[in-house]
Amino acid sequence: MYANHQDQQILPGNFFLPFGGRLSENNRWVQLSYLIPWRRVEQEYSKHFSKHFSKHFSKHFSKHFSKHFSKDVRGGRAVSVRMALGALIIQEREGFSDRHLVQHITGNPYLQYFIGLPAYQEEPPFDPSLLTHFRKRLGPDVINQVNEWIVQAGLKDEQNGDDDQNNNEPPGNLDSPK
Image 1 (cartoon, rainbow, N blue to C red):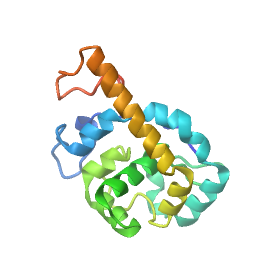
Image 2 (cartoon, rainbow, N blue to C red):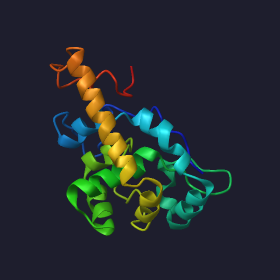
Image 3 (cartoon, rainbow, N blue to C red):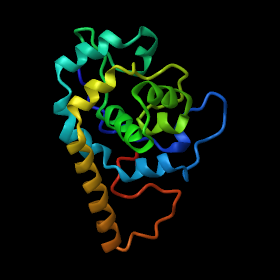
Image 4 (cartoon, rainbow, N blue to C red):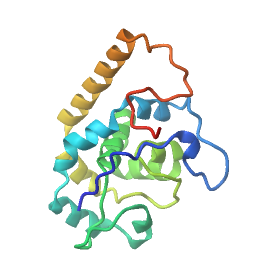
């Protein structure tokens, strides 16, 4: 089943890295995560994640990964829209195959942060076969809509004189904790 993750935006400094250090706020994936209105995306597109999706997700989801997701009462694992859409955005920008995308996400804490994981994990966040289901539910129209929202938010910030914000602070229209 789908689980609502509207308030999942964490700051890069709060992303747990087991090997120490902190994520750089200047990284392109951190910066892009600030631009995407994740709460709005979650509200608009959560309906695309049906019971049918949960069945496929649980079929391919290893018990090793369950600690990062809430469990549905029927046995399926919940996945956020951010994880699905974030993975598709990474794939679109980098041109990875499904298998290579999961390999890159698994080895890169910035990509894990971008898809909404709260901490670095060494295990793959999902099986590559799930990307087919992500694409069916969140196709090119959704990515285009999200891009429009990003542009609109940028124009709004410029009109409000917010275009010279401190780079260490996420933009005001984001879903970061207060």
